[in-house]
Image (spheres, rainbow, N blue to C red):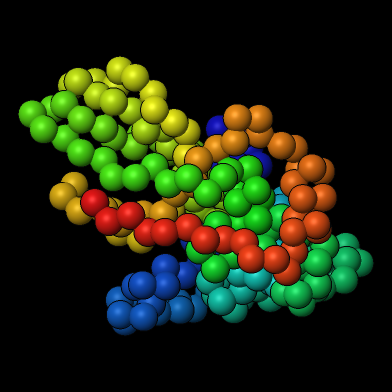
Length: 206
């Protein structure tokens, strides 16, 4: 694991788990000065864009002291803060659409669902894959025909789960285009399509 990714994972200690917070299982703990110094040191290794996003988009997911540290670091770097709308104007591919996909993941794919999966006596179809988009958290998964083990790939998808368990899963998915466009092409596509009727995926319940 590279040091930058390791640092990003370490500062997750400053992040709220919203479900636990809502249920009263987690509160905002006081931060000792040495903990604050450690947090500042680690967050200083994040780039400007990551810190600006933390404040503009993700601030409600973090403790107040973590957001304050991000503000202070950006001030020292002489970097202006952004509102959420300013951020999305600067980075349009990160905007989250109504279905839950970010613009980049939406435009990389087409409106074709993976459909249901099924299994009978270890024979059937499965969605397998774990690589996650850092923005919308959609997962890259391949739909496989399986006979005990995956045998035949049936398609590559981005999938967002609203519910996932061994016996019951609900998800929305979009199939990857044959040729995946680069970020510049995606941005141009979004500028042309913005304001039109996009984002029409349907949830599959399995």
